[in-house]
Image 1 (cartoon, rainbow, N blue to C red):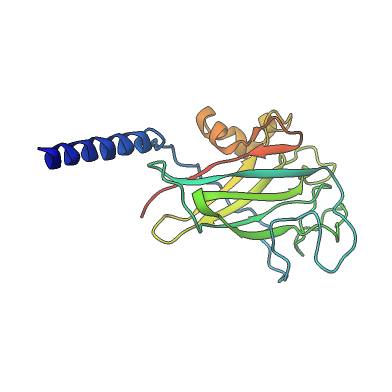
Image 2 (image 1 turned 30 degrees about the vertical axis):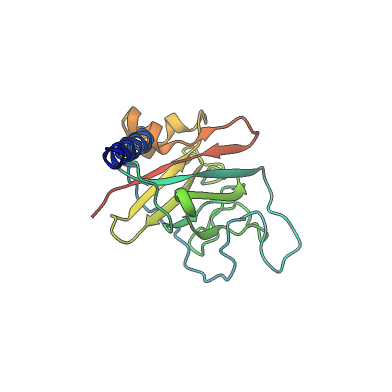
Length: 209
């Protein structure tokens, strides 16, 4: 009797734990995809770490407002994905890409890293530091709203190419790509402010192959 009772209690405990874990895993909507754009980095660089506000070997700091972006990568069942590769790039604070085909008059910032390749950690967490990207082309009548490009990949999942936007930016509703999305898609592609100044949260959801 005691043995049966012990097994019964053990099964009840395990069932309760599974139930508790299950409450934290929710199905999630996939992050919408977006075009790559013309300025994916093609110039090799050794420094590709998570701090884009400085370049190894240079003493200066990138111009502009320093911001921090953090979040998690999940699959569409809500499971966090560790060791996911996030390849990200953006314009500098003047709206200039560190790319030979960007011939705009905006200045190049030699102290801005411009491109990073990072991995998610336990729990699918990632974090990087950068500067708020400028709109481009400089002084054009129609400009792209500030955004960050991301290529997200992990074995066993469909790779995602997308763009992250910033909340309440006045150019969002003038940007053709942003406006082409539904309101739900816009929300999924827009970072969220936090209680900390110049900090944003952005979660990413991938689909299994």
